[in-house]
Image (cartoon, rainbow over all chains, first blue to last red; front, side, top):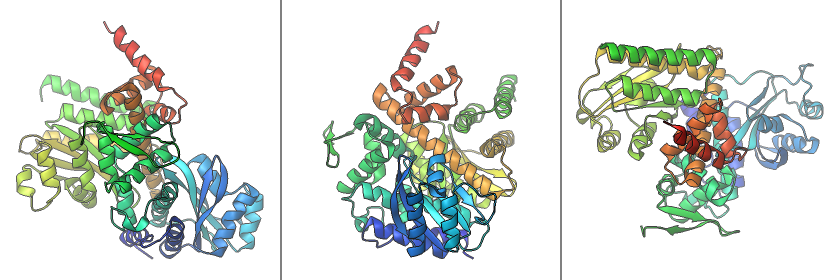
Length: 253
Length: 251
């Protein structure tokens, strides 16, 4: 059993060295298996309530179970995103568990008894879910549940990178620790700047954050530096349609 | 305690108690609470840091929007009296920051640059859990009086109760979930402030006042109004017009 510190460290560094967002997501899923004491993990990307697809997974079984939720159009991961909160199923064998008949049978056939689906948020918008699978029934005990919630936070990073395709995962200005990257985005000024970009560019919260982050990388700035510049109106990001945002400086700095 | 101050303290506690009984928005309540702290206690600024599931601290409320104040709080993710207080579950009192430069080499210069000379950090406790810490900053060196410290801890305790609402506090998972919900609400509020600031061409402090005004006058929760702004269900123009109207109506 791992302690809180080990969990943090293990999950935070899970994506180190990943070449692509997909590699990063796969590595994170494998770290979930290692550190959260589960038998499988997958990350799915969801849009408008319909699953768009499995993004990363710890292995073939997890990938298949995740994909089945798309096939059937039902499952805990879709519900987690729809409800905006975790869906924790301790025991699929329970006859009272009738929410997803097709998915339930498929999971039980695969030898899975417990499923924990946690929404993945980017800039407060639900964009996907992290699914954890267990062969044995039973709840996620502390500190595993806390670890799972934070793994779901980390899962936002590769999804964000998918949105800003030019971002080079290895040259991340914030170092190679996933938590540090996340910490650079979890700041009050970044949230405020995200709101200003939403209004200025007429985009969703997640796209605004992706633009901010992409701009920061492209200009070797931290997310916080870009955010302060936007909040203090020293920097305006313009949308030029397809490409990443370009900038104008209003006071020459 | 002067009669005036005693009456103010009573009013503040009554306000909090009434919120707890009648239902409240946790973000709104905690913002009120840090404002109460700066008014009732001999401190210049106050803020709340809240822990997520694995002990990372996030700014939940601060008594001003000043860049430097926010930085002083955000720095404490890595080091500082609030972080130490949170980890120990005990108050950390620093009457003179100048003497603590060795202990927190990054935090102390940042706090001094922001104009602070003393800091008092109080744990937000709930039974066996420490949820976060309340930081009180003074602009002159010196200790807080025993009376101020007691009152501050009482306010921090109210904040703790407000945070977990009616969840069973012995359920660790429920507490973690509740804190995550509170932190997410804060994110949405900050985004809404950004949206209103951009469209209304104002700073984020004014945007906050506008959102709060709209929420209160329409008997809605602040978080719900922020969510509606962010999801575009509520046009920002309505918020701006309402605030303009409310100002015009003042005698």
